[in-house]
Image (cartoon, rainbow, N blue to C red):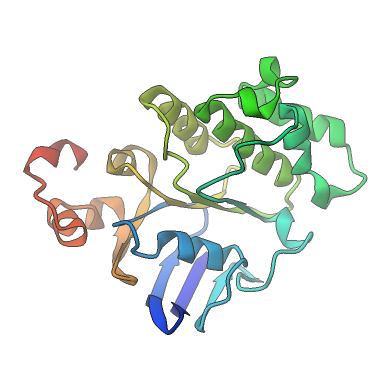
Length: 245
């Protein structure tokens, strides 16, 4: 379970996150939505251990989330930022093997080859990363996280920052079909910041809505993801968006 209590974060005395509290049960896939600048990326960076909040506490099961990432925490927590480096002079299989650094001298070949198969990258394994499409790059990074978490002795936590950004319809569907499957772990917990609201209902169990750096609401998709809530959070007219709900 992810539990976040009274989390605040500021930059130059400006509050980016203010009194953030929520709870996500283990084994759930949770969407994180809100307007640009609402604090989604900042929250994910804090939960990944890359930023330190002004105050607050966050845990995942028995783990403190606010500690800096270590080899040990990489065995149960994976994080994909919104923007990954574009010009990486490595082959696909080399990038996936980067996810294996926490495992030291274990069976590295099997651990890197299995994600290649599961993510449909076998035919691309010798390709240079910088020749891939946006959708292919996202699959490579997800495969890297899968390799990283491949022998987790407990259900892992995965934090993803807008993996749907800059992808076309087909690439988005491919990525989210993977996220909806059990390739990471049958009981994986995911918190995913989303760019496209049409992905919430088909792929997620829960949703957290941020507005102006605060939690507007959170809960199950069926309870929280309503037309009125979207109008309030995004300040838009949802008459043409009825298909989302």
